[in-house]
Length: 102
Image (cartoon, rainbow, N blue to C red; front, top):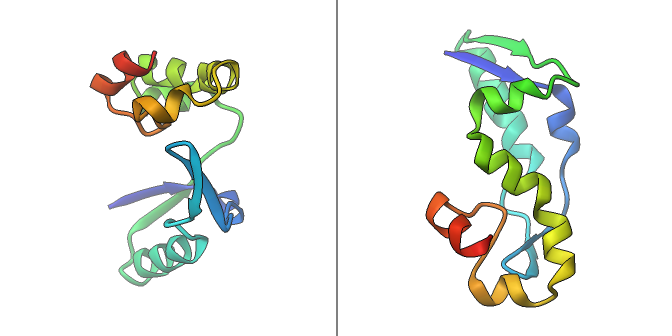
């Protein structure tokens, strides 16, 4: 298995995240990431470091509509307080719910 990552990923370790209009305990802790890397190293999988500052790397693996949805999400969210959580919209919205969430 090829594992593509960047060491900075482990630096992202907030106690809480904002989801469905409120703060919740962060379910994806950096420790899980470190455990994953330890296991793939032990199993001798190929691990490469992802380059930074290469925007096309995002669109190589994500749908362009999803990337645009995320790029514009914050501005739309702050323009309509309360609107998003009432509609059940999150940054992890599916294609179908993105149509509903705008």
